[in-house]
Length: 182
Image (tube, rainbow, N blue to C red; front, side):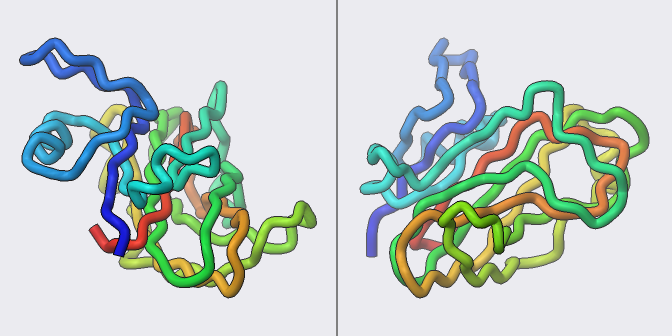
């Protein structure tokens, strides 16, 4: 089983030590990582051998002025991730900006039939999607989740957020692939 590394997905400044963690910084699991995450560091897990490869197991996309949602079950924020054959966990995280009264949900799905050569994979969510109504008092709103991925062949996988969200824009979204359930 590969070991896990954590990839920083949003810049973080740790006041006590004066250390700046930039996006893409790779961290090892342990007490220090857990302390930083409790202070607000945002990082996603990936297999350590993928963390420094050109087809990394973690990516972040910024959506400029924000990806708009209209309350109708729709797809948005397309993302691509490389996966080898077999089963793994996919972790996702998105930052939302309020532009009204948040409602609905967002979740990660496999986006099939894009015609761009990406693979169709099985993706089984682990739990319910975050309910935006319960997150109204946060700024920014961070939503996340994980799903079990099954790939019959290795290659690039097309993923997207899907949901019925209203009152929010997606500022950025990130996704990672990890063999371990963390």
